[in-house]
Image (tube, rainbow, N blue to C red; front, top):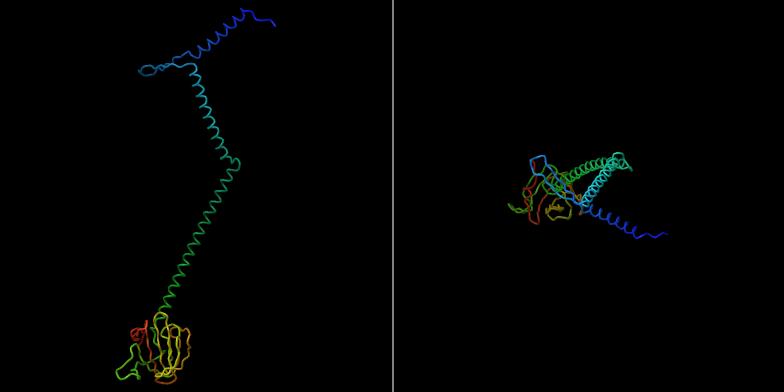
Length: 261
């Protein structure tokens, strides 16, 4: 291999230095940019190096690439949604159908709930009315005899005397002694003055006592309704001494009895 002469080496070195110098000049050379407006305003100028110009172009190119990428991505997504890519459109349609079905089921359930609430309120009202009727029936406001009866002076009391909370009736044979209100029979026993005694607890503080010579037809522990037969008079001018207590205190029967005629 032939070695280079000194003159060749000198020439190559000079050429290399010249090239590098040109590159350095190109990089450091400044270019003046002037902005000349259409109006009467003064023109403006500024200097840029070659490297700054290259960097600006590169930055602008990067921004353009990013914007183009975003536009392409958006276009692809819209295309997929419009053309049902991957079953997305079908899934959306199915979800809309299911949503419509759920809305209908919800409406049906609301209608059922409304009907149930109405039925419950109706039942509660009926139960309330029934309870009120039972409570009213338990108050001994009825006449203790089924038929015509006459109030008389108690023959077992001295003239002008009377037992507080007691009235005495006389009735004909066959007349029924009835419960003045619903309750429970808590006593059936003999009475030294009238023959028999029946006691009813009405469950609301009221207790009624029937003293009579009638033939008794109930037993202790029986539940009776208002106007149920307790006994039947077996002779004319039979007596019934009827008494009322409320919370242990005597009550005047005539003050609460519903008497006709």
